[in-house]
Length: 263
Image (cartoon, rainbow, N blue to C red; front, side, top):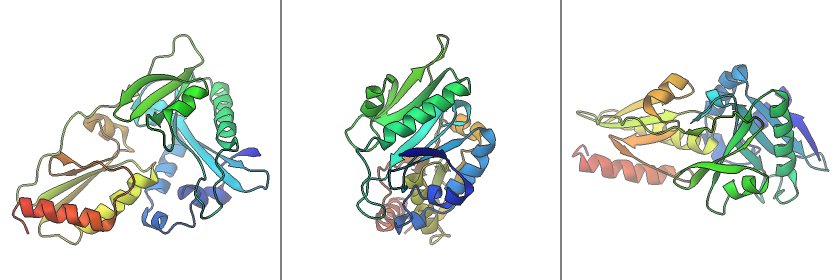
């Protein structure tokens, strides 16, 4: 296997998280590319791993924590690490040490940059990117938010523990329309797909729906609201795991419009 830095020839593959075969990824829009263009000027780094056959099998993206979705200083934040695990496309390539190779290369890079540590997030449930996987690689849990945990590894005694950004305020309801407020950062395709579906749906109800979006790539916006990626119907947050289908979103929207007597 071999770990390489992202080059322009592989950017389009990176923008769809190595899932160029997926129809769903075609719905993600260009938010990932916009995020990449913004953050590469602020220290974003991306690495790919090739398996023994030379197939691009995984990726990792990390950046200075000051520009990430958490609060911290003098650290690097791993947004996500991903080894292709689907049967479709290039096939299930997990369980072959490719993720470990990506993590070790990233840690070496971060140390060479003089950071005081590296922080990541993982799920506390045994699926996808788990906190337990990082802990197995020497990380320590330092904060949690629901099913998600922050973990870190330090390289300096005076490293300050990072923490989740907490919500600071809630959007106000629409007056004569149902207001949909969308906070979008761009780093995660699942969130981007949901954003694109909600935006497309809202456009079909111009007389009864007010659509507002907030670009949280602007850290000032993120810090003002305490949100990175989030969706609200009026003042009610709507939480999803995998991207909800367009059909499900339509059902939820029609229910909300009915409750507001707008339908």
